[in-house]
Length: 105
Image (cartoon, rainbow, N blue to C red; front, side, top):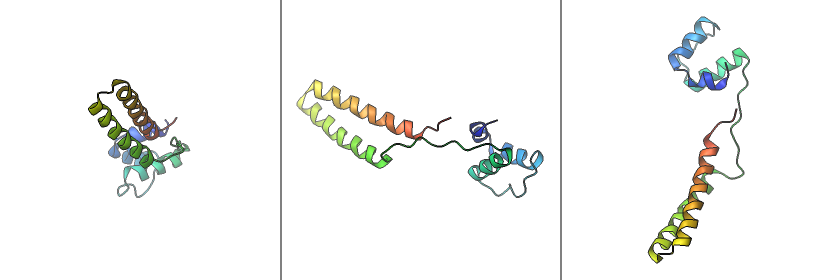
């Protein structure tokens, strides 16, 4: 069992596992994240690191907003080439956000 399998389990199942098999006390008041961390520590499972990008989420979102303004201008000017380029840039920025949210194995 790894960290991701623990995180996918329901809270009730995690509490049951902690009480019966691992005999960890005081699990009824814990939130899922705390419970997963305690279980992983008791089972000797290391927590994976998130993918770290050089820039933050807010910077990417600001660029997306600016690109959307540029996209609207290209629509108004009926500039198809610029519109296509800007839409592809928006798509690439959104993919960066999705990659940042994903956890590595």
